[in-house]
Structure formats: structure tokens, C-alpha cells
Amino acid sequence: MLDRFYIWTQKGFILEHNLGKSKRIISCSRHPSTAPTVTIYEKHGVTLTLGCEQESDSGLLATLTASNSSDSDISSFTLQAAVPKSVQLHMKAPSRDSLPARGAAELTQTVVLSNPNKVNLKMRIRISYTSQGSAVQDTVQVDSLPGL
Image (tube, rainbow, N blue to C red; front, side, top):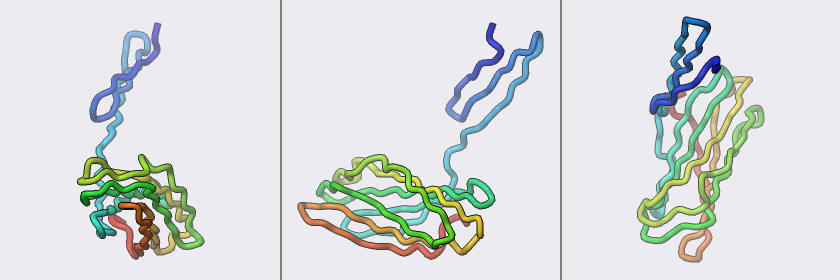
């Protein structure tokens, strides 16, 4: 006999727990991200947006999303980020390393930030990619993170 089972829905899951004759239902929502996003870079058809969500008192989850509206595919796309020394940064793997032409797909990369000293958060992001055989490298400075 099963003690508990989970019912998955589009909005999250419901845990149904059978305790003898009674059952308890616990709802856990999986809300779509409502984090505000801002466009932080727009050049040569490449657009980079940044969205931030507070995870805990000192933790922050930032999502970088890149797209390519140009007529040429982009390859070897990488993002690097730098923050103040007192902030810990962990960049997760990107969803892909290329951006097809005309916005056919997006690249997303999550950055986890820990800011125990609560310093003013700034971020410098280096964007590197190859387009039509030419290497492109650019840097963008983000002086305030959206939603904070």
C-alpha cells in the first residue's frame, strides 16, 4: 500500500498523503517566473536580457537570456560574469552555445549569487561569439539588478 503519491499539474504538484482513513492534501505551486527583466545588451542583432529573483535573504538567482535577430547564425557564444569580491558567483551551464539566425532559438544561463554582506550588487558581463567567421567580444556593465 502506498503512503503517499504525487499528482503533477501544469502549476506544480499536489501531495496526497493517506493516513489510515484520512488524507491530507498539500499544494505546492510552481509559479512561472515573474521576475522583471531588462535588456542589458543590443548590438549586431544580439539581444541579452537579465531577470533576477531573490531566493533567500542573501541569495539571488539571475537569468541571462540571449537571442539573435540577425540573418547569420552565431557560434561559440559564451557569457562570463564578474561581481564585487565579497559576492560569491556560480554560473550554471548555458542551455546551448549557438544562436540560430532570426531568433529561431534562445540561449539561457543561470547565475547564482550569494551576497551575505549585502553590498550593492553590480555585475560586469563579457559576451563572446563568432559571427560570419569573425570573433566578437563585448562587455556590458550592470549597475543595478532588476527587481531588487
